[in-house]
Length: 235
Image (cartoon, rainbow, N blue to C red; front, top):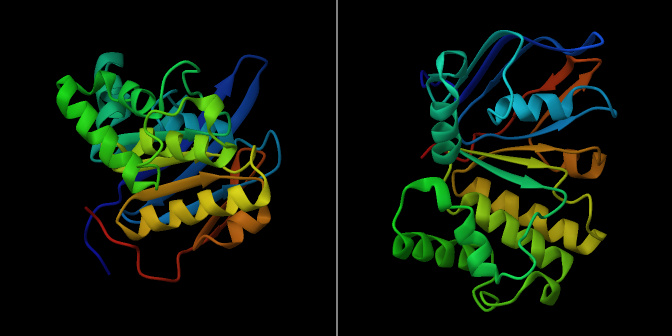
């Protein structure tokens, strides 16, 4: 058994909203480096809240969350933003691309807060687009790309800074079956290269292709089917 601490550790995590609404109720989760897991559950189960907390976009009401060795409860907002920029990438169902900008500029935009000089950001963006198979589409604007290609640009933007953790929220939800399968294949390839990935999905077929499934209902983890294969590896 590996003695390496998990990339993500959540203990007793709750999240309360006014109402009152209990979105998360005592969640305990570890995610090891190199893992690939699906987070599933019905609408309103707490999946999105879990994503926001994992991505440091929100703080838990109680409990502890440690990401890449950092306890997010102890960090001020500015430090949380820096942690997010260095360690976490996001892919959403809606691609969130800048309409008038080419693929390269859209990926560069995701590196704006990295602190890197423009030339380095451009080099990383070019490498990321080649990595997702869009080396010949760098100047194409979103309206010149298919849905699957738009999502590949979004994935490139998320992984350009080589984050420790990639969070994908319904990444195939807006795509046809063929494009969705291609994007899922890409995520599997990225994981095989060492990227730790959590995919939030309501699609059972997507979840069944991933080696671990975390099922949430009413803010609680009701099923955690552990990875039965060796993780792709840590970086």
